[in-house]
Length: 316
Image (cartoon, rainbow, N blue to C red; front, side, top):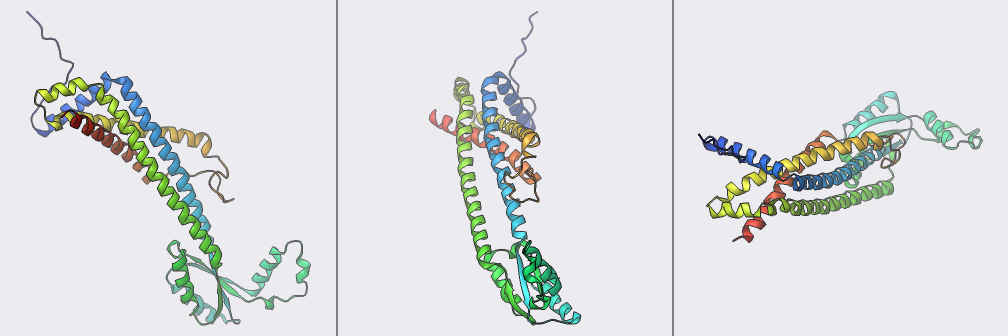
């Protein structure tokens, strides 16, 4: 009695979409096991590419965090034309708080203003001996919400603030704010430009690396075309294989990034954050981590799809 030799190839078990999908997954996993070296090279390329992207995002996120902290220190100072009664002061501050874009409002009396002035003249306080506090006007310091810190929004806010009765002068360092916003917009533009070029380079490299996997089974694909297999039937296992490779590369890239972060980046001082109140770098937010995982899957899928399209078209 002869025994049938078990096949190493997955069989198309079951009918319908479920059966085909299970077959495609089994075929993709078998292809990975049979071409370990090429798949390791592909996953390594994706890992390196996504690690570079992750490091770029880490720097970009911390730059944005630093910029947000700096912009939070931008204050609008409104000086009073005279001393107001508590009722009048309460009314003025209520009107200021009602202006759209106001975040916090604090009152600075004449005594407090003189105290701050003396602190700025540290070591030369004697210059103010005999100078009464009345020479300095009282004021209110206003912190704006993030959306109101841009040039046009801040100018519109100041225009409304000047209409409040009792306010004689408004200062907010127009030139410094304008230069700061211009600098940050330039950084965002350069970041987006570099990020775009980096993604294009990554897709090109990964696509050509995945092409090695397909060329390794060139004869097999030609036989499948000759026996009448549809394009989808040929492509599906390779697309699933690309998704698996992309997901594996993304996970490895994140693991390396986490190891590098807790190894030395977390304690890095003054690397990106230029503020004395922040030490080291912040890690990527969850939405960016999810984006890297999704990006790895999409990268593997598009790399396989591009390579398959070129190969199948070249066979016609």
